[in-house]
Image (cartoon, rainbow, N blue to C red; front, side, top):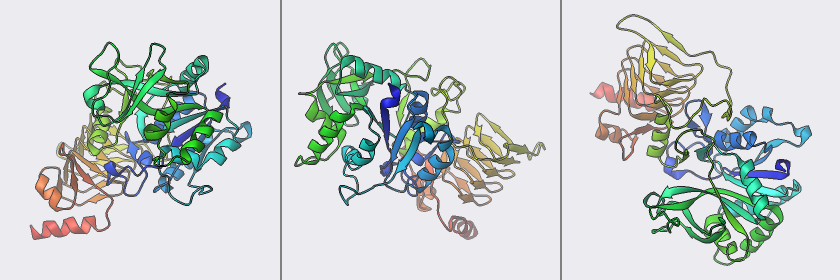
Length: 417
């Protein structure tokens, strides 16, 4: 049954709300939790669900994502057994334009999908953090004789307003109404405070999907988007069911995150360093896989009372050296160096960041390869950080992007002071 499913992961969005982290990479390629990329969760869910035929549709700034999947994921699949995780850039077989919407992205790759002769097509977003067994969703799809099944979760109506597609269902979970990002979401029957929000997970019977995509492609005024156009058009005349989210995270509350803003991204990462994080990354029954480079173990050097390298309540990745510096409540990516007398608090350091001596970092996200010169303070003066050209979020998180000349700029700033 699962071998007849083709998973299509949509990984082509710009991720503009995560700027500047998406300035040089696609949103699904943004690092998460130090060692992972956001797309690793969707791909791990496929692998753990036994679904080993995967197409990853890319579009913008896809080089790092392509490299990550090539280096970290190909070893889990055997092409001779019909298994694969292929990155598919825009083929422009049907249209020379960029993808116009989620449905158009699938439609423009319909030739590639049909060539695999799937019985079912599972469409996933590549930029959400969650654990889910797609096989259970497939079983319900077959049992109900559905043409399409949509993954849903309960959300507070106030939180879902203008953010999610919202569904209305009958007693059998058949969808009888659909609103795309409504200001006033319809409540769940019996619970006026909650609604059923779309997770952006769609399971289709393949032939039905092909027909609907071809129909939508010719529809005037369509934005060629599943939520805006395809789903609303099919629910009145076809068997479309909701699949309530069943969490594989094994915690008291379900875990599903759209880390689409800098503050949401920061909060989701900071959860991982808590004593009992909401997201269980240590569950061997549902592992999250990724590319692990061949770096040496992290190292902490100098034990002098005034010059001691240590990290508390933190995640420290391979290849990193805490050389006489202090790290607290932070995520330290691969090959990071924190030099003597430096302090890093409540921050996320991407790979290959270097923190100079006596520098002080607080509530910051620092992108890959950035060098912070000695003695510089980041995250202590909002106006100063804004004046330097950094982004400071609504919640006061300073974000430093990759930038040529950053070190020289900050050095000159110190000289003037």
